[in-house]
Length: 274
Length: 311
Image 1 (cartoon, rainbow over the protein chains, first blue to last red):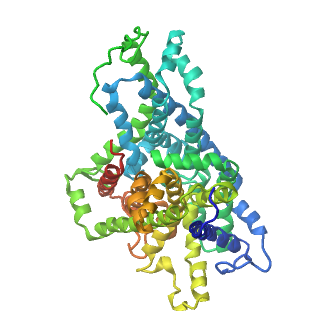
Image 2 (cartoon, rainbow over the protein chains, first blue to last red):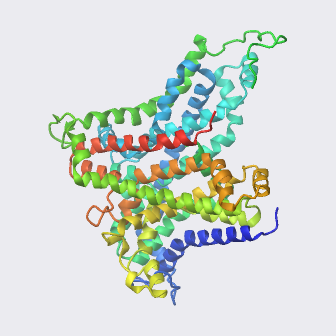
């Protein structure tokens, strides 16, 4: 490593400014969350008498325990299935099809830039026809489909880099495709699967449009969707709103801090490939 | 590369044909079975709704009663109605903030640092800068609504530095609401772009910079002729991600301004939601949805083309 040249001092200064800018909104929310109930606090001012009780009240008002449960159920409904079928499809597209079937892959890729808003209206009628409106399945099933372009693209890219010899060796040993997939390919794909899992978890947990349109009851929504409802209800009570928002974003932030390395890697690769 | 593409004399004989190779019937069956579940999910919840969107866009339909065939009239409305055009224009204005601020600041940081951020400082930086990527956009919207509120931190700061006359309710201001929303998006995307560009610049061969310096290149020239071309791919990624985020924005606007005041911050995503579910103009909403999808594709295509590796 070079010693600190003036250049890198400037860089450090810039980065520190960026970090402060990134953190200020959180600090501002925290200071407001600790202000006495019903007051209209100032932007950033440590309250004379911090009201940690606001968090307890927000926890009860927002029914955080139920929200956590609801979001967890939705994530459990979406992520494992999506990862599994995308891994299978990625393998199928990368290893089992010839160039003639490139179109199939292109059909998937076409969905990569598709804004969810482009299909939200028909999704509403489709989900209603299935009788799933206002249930968690209204979020789970469409999300699985909507995640396929990225997930399949991601897993296919991984399997393209796996040497073909491996498949051939497994085939010579008489393994069926299915066995080869589970015993050889999946274990090797673990890093790619791990990153995909993290990304899909985040996107599901933070998903807003689908819950807002498809599910009325905030208790059946994702965390983000519930936060929207919470703001609608308590938008004028700044201390409570800020306390509630901080609580609602705490779970992902906590997970992120624990698995910081994996999250950063997943988000960066996710951006590059997406 | 020379032209010896024909097989060299000592080429190994082709390996013995292996059991089920690509293209055999059995393999094709297996391929379909592996791809089918993903494809069915994709077809059911993306391709089918997309076709329905196109179909709805040709109708005049309130979502309940009889639908009338309406031809391309909805598209004509989308492309001529002054409100809808303003809404589409708003999305493109957001691109300026969502894209330019993160990319320019990211480039500045990357060019200044030009090395790995190792050690504890690097870890802390990464963690902090990625926080906005981890939280729901809704939370970012709420945090910044509070920042921009009349007693919020932005006004507090302005007053502290003697610019009280600038203080205002930013998100309720006809002129400043859209830039304020843009700042929220820039805040969300800033860390990601910065880290992508900082990582990208470490991959540029340092000897290029040394050679340039020996040739007496000025810092600006280094930036222009080494850094920018070397980062082409990463810049492309940043632009792609941020442009999509701006054009398809919904969460931030829904939370921070609801599209107001007036329609000054309404974006297509929000308008689709309103038209379809509040005003019951399903056909028009669908036409706007298709136009939005096409606009995203058109905006992204040249970026992809310019930044792809020349190969």
